[in-house]
Image (cartoon, rainbow, N blue to C red; front, side, top):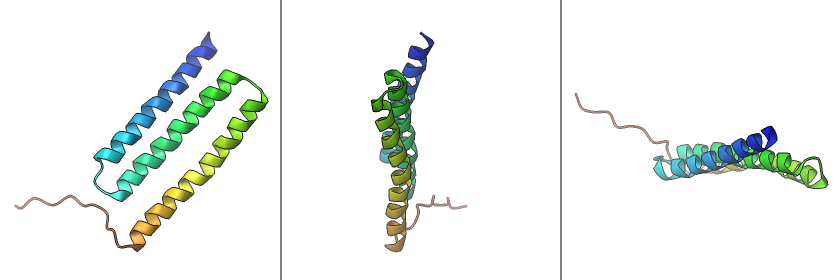
Length: 103
């Protein structure tokens, strides 16, 4: 019973962070803040869902495969986000700044 509740909590966290990341991509003003929202929430969402799946399946060969996929995702996601951000910086895309109000 408690295990099912923990699984549901991890699935709910995955869904919550997935939706939050999508909202961030739509609402934030520039590539850098959008990239942060998508990468942070995306990693948290995917890892939460994978943890729920590992708990759901127990200790099986499927769990080992999910763990390998999770580790691969944890390694490649920050690297790809860094490459995108670095390329945007090299292209001269400046971070968004709030315009100051006249006094």
